[in-house]
Length: 499
Image (cartoon, rainbow, N blue to C red; front, side, top):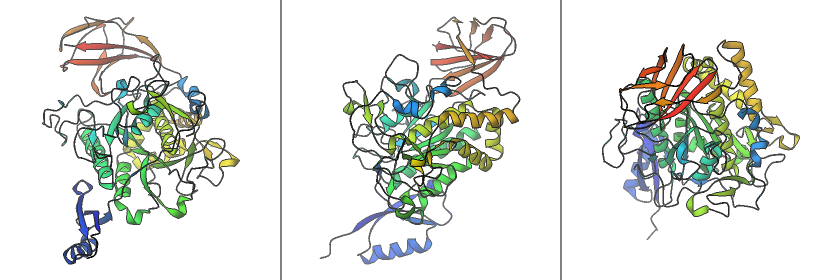
């Protein structure tokens, strides 16, 4: 008797939207399954095999100096002006990390983990009405549940999270490229440590559903994901056999979402051999390989489907509990998996720093704005040693990206300037306070100041205009909030506890 050859496939019926993605297991050696297979090929608008995901990491090598990659990408000059957080208009910028989970209790990450405070965790109810039950810490696309950390322990995703957004200037551990951005935890690997196209699609659908809700509610609901970090994929594949990946990336583009994607850790030309999602043609997709002064000896390359390099050798970052070292919950990692999040971190930082005119451009002319943002990110260092290894023949330079953005914004937005916005501590009385009560603020010469109240997830829950130092609080749930008061080129800030 012939051995069963059961394969899992993904498909959409003709006319279905992406959020109606279905899966089926078929053994085409059996007559009925063969008929079903033939029918789906003929009738489904999208039909493909559900491939097994691969993490894009490689084994650790000897230690090097701490966080040398930050100097390589010239990030410290950017930090002289911006260190991340909110956009100029006070909006949160969310980076979604689609991987194997994040250690949400890590000492250098927990303050920057996105938490959905509109959801009551583990009560079995969709409290915020976004279609997902108990998604307090994110979503597990592999198991379609809210428990995001797999048994694998987030060993890959935790390291990626630290590069993008380990808390900065907190006297603890390392510094992420973006000191205060919010990290959305989406697990594409389930409790059996297996992930596939279907689990990624579920994570992608979560991003899209919540982005749409954010736009429809004018920011009062949903999640404002702006950047997606991918360090997973399927090698030796092309879009013709993987239309679902590319369809989702295109859909991200419709909402102005950019993607930073890691090229494989295999020394081959993926323009020829293929790779998903690298070979998708979405213009909001930037694929990153591993290179500094030279291309890494295990890095994939290609001048069509790889865009830029970043240093993925001996990268010190946050570590999951099972990967700690003599440095504590930190360790050195290697691979393009850790090159790509450097680009994601810079993307978020530049988006936060960019002028209001660009954010409006992203709404009004999304396709053109994506091309512009892509041009900024690819303003890197060209090196002869990287020629013929990626599209620009070079590597990431964060300061060059900032200068490109500055030039555009200065020419088009008279409210924009490149000076760092000074910051001072704000004193609030009383603190703790009661929702709806009056509070006093220690601000000198209050006139035309703008008040922002931000939840611990980074969501702006209130905006107002201040013309005196006393203000009546809006209705707020119990919890910890950040209060920012912007007055000309100065920002005052404080934590506020609502009882």
